[in-house]
Image (tube, rainbow, N blue to C red; front, side):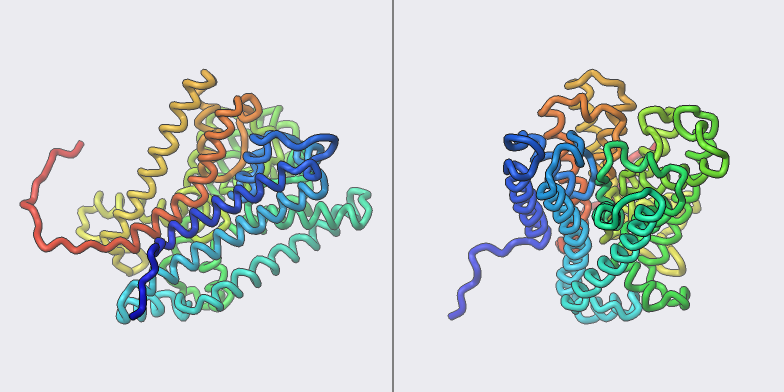
Length: 446
């Protein structure tokens, strides 16, 4: 008689446990004396915070990355960022595989038809696709950045290659780590450095399912799946609107864009709007930006990037579905329809659950940090959303936080990275049929 295993873990639990184990391993490695420059080991909180920030591809730093960590420590950080970005895409895709296998044959066939040939049951194909896309984008970006550093900044080839590769991996994985204390401010007016970083971050933030489908059917948009259409239709306008607003709002600010030549200001605005989607780089001083710019960046960070991507946030598809649901309610329509496809009520409820749960986490963390630090509310909100959305931009509050505050932000980064994925998977796999129903009630709304 075949014995059943004692413990059958939910796929979402496996992802959470895997990331927890990786955080502990990264903390242990960064705590070694060989991981930092100078004598002694790194402080345990610094090692923990950096490991979480790298693995969750956030980019928040409490110590100077280049000056504090040795070459061994930098390699560990780079490896954690690569595993974090690659693991998130792989984990999200594998959770899709698990979810599809829980469906019946008819539902699986409908899923394959909707995705236009993307076989969610082929785990090997999913993994190989993730690896190929990651290596290709990172390699091209590394070559471009290395060439520019070597020819334009008087760097030796090994030094340019190391920094270019580090920045390429950090860009595609939206990790935000840079081998410079001032991030990308030295390159604020250099399109040959800024645009490759923007492009790599943009591609990493689209998500593997979208990239794979675009690779196969780029010239036939009429055959794109609903997910791909929603992602692109939401991502591009958000980037354009964010670029326009930040550029206009900061145009005359002498501490940010106002000090640049007129042609460099739109480039800086584009770079910063792209960075708020999750990469976390900055080419201007974030702490000197206007309050309106901070608010717009809060919104962009909270929305984040595409599902199954290296970006954080509640994801653009979640935001798009909620926006379409609101529009349908205003029109008095009984169903939510997108691109001539009816969206199931359950999917809309899942999007609402993920969004409201994320809002709840941000609100609770904000209250705790405000009471702990007595810092201005706008600074705390910016820091909390940046951490939860795994962006890595800072209002200047991070370096002022006590160890307890840094641990809270580390927990936010962890929750922000695995939370939406595991919650979405749990909701998709949870299917309870009730054999009875209650009488309808209509409470007053508004």
